[in-house]
Image (tube, rainbow, N blue to C red; front, top):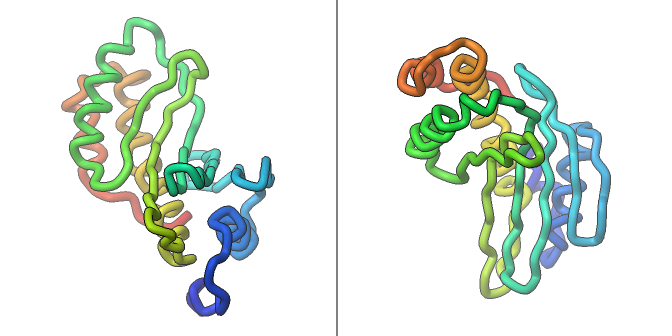
Length: 166
């Protein structure tokens, strides 16, 4: 049964929808506030922290998918070069590195202007796309940081898309 078949009512709060999806997939989650939820999504390479927050002001469902990464300081210029290459291949969302928190971050914002509602399949796809992107580029990031590869060489491992599902 598709996730959308479980919703008959319109006008469901986006974070309520995300919570339902987390329950459906049996992901560990914590409803941080009425407008924010954090969950742990298991991937092949690691467990990813996925947080979604609703901003009624700008009508955007914001998502960040993070994992810890502690590259040596001297690797940061090459890491930023690799992130530019990675982001050139990402159609939706983008990666950044938050050095202070030592986190690799995939970010995406779903704009629902004009009172639009997010559909369950749409939100589920958004979360799964984030995890799949993290899975796809994780080996390239590791090769660059710990395998002494150049950004261009490290990207070669990410040419093929990751298989499986989150």
